[in-house]
Image (tube, rainbow, N blue to C red; front, side, top):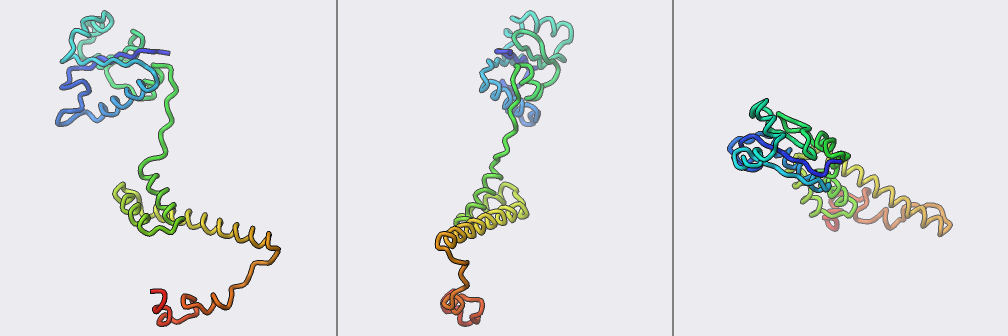
Length: 204
């Protein structure tokens, strides 16, 4: 396992190269991958030719590659002093391989997934303000109406299943069959059999 990784960058405006008006989209990804390597216990050192030429001059390996290939060999990646990549920025999978690490599995629990879970929880808890809030947040994150509908259906199915289970338990312990709808419920103001005009007085 490589416990030290050195990155020798071509001339850039800053240590990461991501602050200019049109940075290479690969650079933010690479910077994130280096942070991940550090979190795994690998020591990472990064040098920019425009700002730290002394680091290039201090390495015989780097000097030899610059003499043979010129700046085209940059970025140059060394693992424990040996060149493992040149001329392009490696992927996280490649960096993990250089360091002898297992690449982490991609995270499935994204902000969008979190909002779908919250939408389901809103349905399960009958919380209208919660649902409205998480519906708006999910839309801002680009979650489709179809995916939100699936979250609602899943939560509703779980709630109905749970209600059935507790009723079955109650009936089993009480040693009785499932009761029929009571006359009181059938004639209540919110019953489907009640006219709309009558229901409006008590159900809003």
